Image 1 (cartoon, helix red, strand yellow):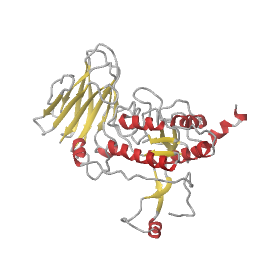
Image 2: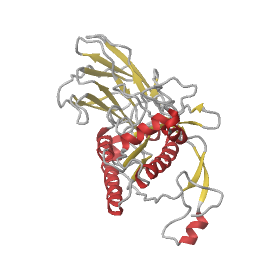
Image 3: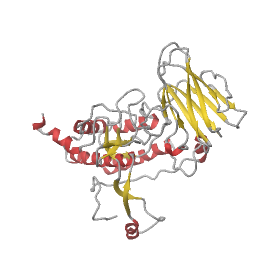
Image 4: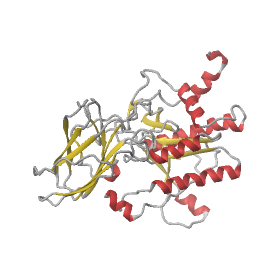
Length: 395
């Protein structure tokens, strides 16, 4: 694919891409995801990452993995199993993990309560659109806390309080409207040991649903709730009292990966949809912000495969796109250049994901930014700033 008017961030790198297979229908059915929306299973993504690691090891080359996917299903603290895997690989020298923060800040898909006293309860209101056929909500809180829930339909029908017990599962059928809600208590979630309550709404009645949350212990604490990412839910389904913070998608909440939000590099303006930190555990994420508005680059090929090289070039298309995946791609290119300087040229052969992240944080542009920031992290991506601060005169 040749275009004399276009050059990527790191034009001399070798690119290996994995086309991840679509999730199976039973998984789509469980989470009520329409067949028209791309959806991938966590295990398949992990298999793809392992494949790329094997290719890099076989060729004796450093590897930069760019993951432009994310989910709201995790606890927004350690990045889920996928985040743990990426952190583990990222500890190896020459393997560098880059993830997108997400596009969730303005979706109203995150709720965080005001401090709730022990024994008290609060009602969380969710507006459900008329075209919504099903969705999930997950409530997360620290392992030291214990919460129970009850549901009130738009018709005023109350499910009653369900008890928080180990392995508790409840199927609640509402007489009016035909809605069925499946409630599952994970008092010790597999990814962190924290409490997770999963609510799955099947054929929900449109209108305002109320989720009554009960604090079963005596401490005064918070909890968080998330709806699915914007691709997997009707845009008329959202929390009425939403919080735009803590909206970074997993696995980007893992401290062992490089996570970037995005901004408009033309005017240094904030992108309204760019997901914001910090993590649920209040660790600093994103690490920094990168250009992600109207980023010019290649677009998918038109037509079907297989095709010859000349025909591939004829079908090559270029254009602009906006989003956190574009920012992650720009960052991955910068990380590749950093890896060339550090590993290929022998300036820091011990470079891993954590060291690469620290290089980029040290060189980030903080002009006009108070750090750490939920929007900007530690500043904006600036590769020149990295090397400028490495010069003896900079100290």
